[in-house]
Length: 364
Length: 71
Image 1 (cartoon, rainbow over the protein chains, first blue to last red):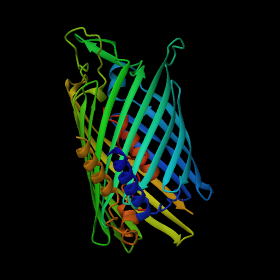
Image 2 (image 1 turned 30 degrees about the horizontal axis):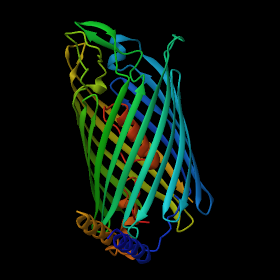
Image 3 (image 1 turned 135 degrees about the horizontal axis):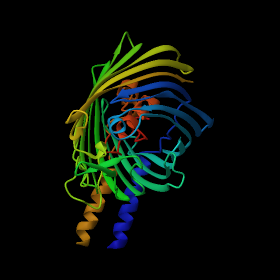
Image 4 (image 1 turned 180 degrees about the vertical axis):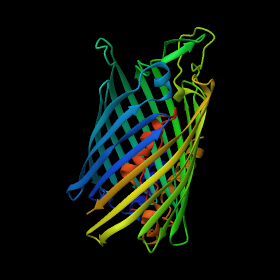
């Protein structure tokens, strides 16, 4: 019985490969991107340049390098109520290697982020594989992060944090004009997961926050994009997130893209809604002593809403030789932190934020 | 039970052998930039960073990959 089953299964597998000879994938095309980004909101601004260069080294191998700077000026609500405004710069370097093997793309990347009091290093491996005659793309990925946490003006403070990320994804061609994908990611953290500067509040008095040293989270995201006519598309996305700190979050995004003047202009527009519940140990002003306690508003129950519009202009192109595009994107965000009191006026804290991005890209 | 498993395995594998219902020559629209879920590399990465440092949720963004199945 088992022998017959094995023979039948082998026959079916053989038939599968015979029916769909491997259509080799290509490595990502040669590309250079330069971006300038601005975030301004809630008393905090972060600006800086970013660069990305990708070049094929051989027929089936492509290498990439990236550089990213965040020049931060921080006078956010926690800083002005419990500390002093400060400025600092975060710099991130990344390198990557993509190798195409038949119908698989193997991507190895490393990044290093440096701040005066926080160093983070990450290594990632992702493998995407086309199956069913290119109708389905399956992705498996893993990242390992290792951080060193310090504290300004206190050299004796030094701690570490480690992160493990496991992700899988499937993108499916549903029709000649419709794609859908599902992505799952599990993240585990171990080590110092708070901020050495942040204060919590107990009976109105400020005390150092006390954070758990482990966290595990899961997220699942569904996406769909459909062509509308010959010049446009619409997309919808939803993500559900949950973790061992009892945070549950929903993210919705709806967007559309459309060409104008032939394919010279490509305009997008999107709306994004986000809502999360609070961590078990979050309190705006605790009325009892607990093992863990934070007043990190990122872990409070809040909602945000964003609306944005990226636009891309085709500057110049020569088919099969090169293409140069210029892009600009603006997004306005509104944060309503209903569990976080603005100590300056006793009201729930809310603020707007603006994100501006300008980018020039060349593919060659 | 063994027979049920055998029928299920055969069914699953037979499903694998299904002809692609969208032929390669019908995927031109799927390769158009207007159909890309993520086409601004640095812009998308920065936008993801803006969200992850301000929200409790993280992961499954698809920014790091996922492919489009339209190669």
